[in-house]
Image (cartoon, rainbow, N blue to C red; front, side, top):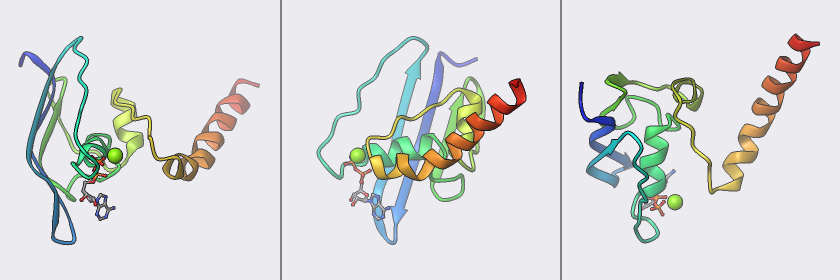
Length: 113
Ligand SMILES: Nc1ncnc2c1ncn2[C@@H]1O[C@H](COP(=O)(O)OP(=O)(O)O)[C@@H](O)[C@H]1O
Ligand SMILES: [Mg+2]
């Protein structure tokens, strides 16, 4: 088993020919807290969107290994099920997801009633 709880290996992501991420590697050990720094457009959000499945497997190259398991997330729901949760800075994105989050919470409450 690797020392790392999370590995992002050789991640490359392009938007219509523009390389937002070019062979990026990130390794995180259990208990570590990392800050991702860079100017606007450096690719911070894109890297986190790749990690959380906002950009599904197949739309980037490279691989994600979390707790020793290769992850091929199709959407954020799948990454959340594994314990990877992203809190979005972009409010527009949050509002896109609110209806779904609200409806799943309502279903949960209905099940309990
Ligand atoms: N949905 C998108 N379509 C096209 N280009 C994008 C998109 N999202 C990000 N980019 C481009 O990818 C690069 C990285 O952006 P981003 O990850 O948002 O950077 P940061 O979060 O570090 O400011 C920038 O050049 C940005 O213009
Ligand atoms: Mg950003």
